[in-house]
Length: 166
Image (tube, rainbow, N blue to C red; front, side, top):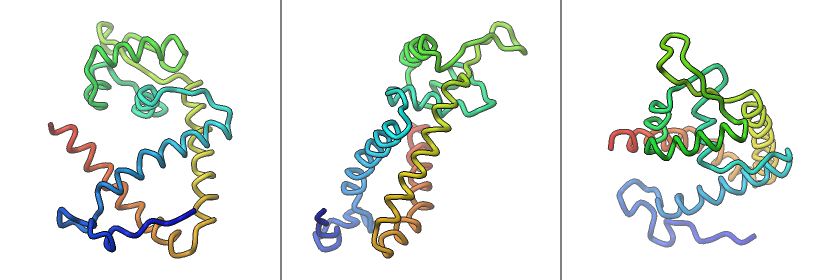
């Protein structure tokens, strides 16, 4: 595998004053996510659940419920789009819709045990795959990766916050 010249040497690092080559980071994140998703699915023999459905299930961790409107707002989706997703997911056995115990007029969405089981297996496989890949890196790269995790979490949070304030 060849390495590209680092962003500072190319003169593109932090064109916005942050020291971050935003274009390079953005170009790495999506393929990295897809590679991890594919590897975990293959390792665990998991079904090919569309990304949008994965995001809905991630928004419904074990023991939580949400109304369709709450999910649409949380995920930044239009309500008709979410309604179509929920219909497909319900048909696939990934979510269940039920009337609220507190207010019978309100509909709640919950991830099914089957969907949560898929995610438990996916998360365990993903962690193992990342650990194996990180162990194959030179020590300096592994250390840089470990040090980057809090910054990547903060970046994720900033992106979510920016989306929800627009």
